[in-house]
Length: 136
Image (cartoon, rainbow, N blue to C red; front, side, top):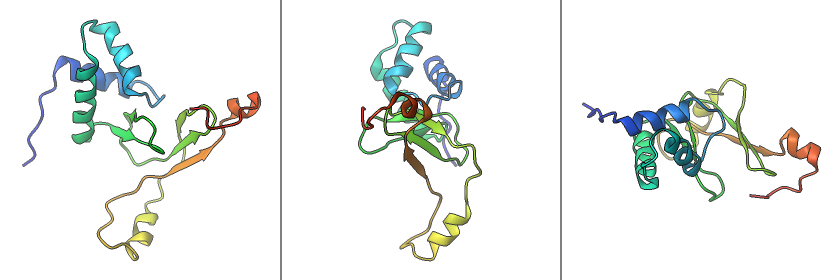
């Protein structure tokens, strides 16, 4: 049986911050938001709680190309669009293609449990501003 972790005031607030935004925030952004409610909260506390929430599958951690992590409160299967200009991350409004798991399973050296898919490109804002890309 999986041991249930304790939902502290800080942990609940961090979870709420992430679930109530669609900007896929960094730990630093979460820290700045958390300080508005609990001024004495430390960056270390935010990092530890983010990692625990990821481990407990309450949130997702998104890492891309070795850059800093971003966090997502939407744990349902979905895809992301990452702007190569500004680094913004957006949820794709499309159904996750679970058939990919079955297709890949035939060639996989083990058991497929799921997949993540990211699309890279320039967002409309960056296209309109003439960004050159890779600014982050």
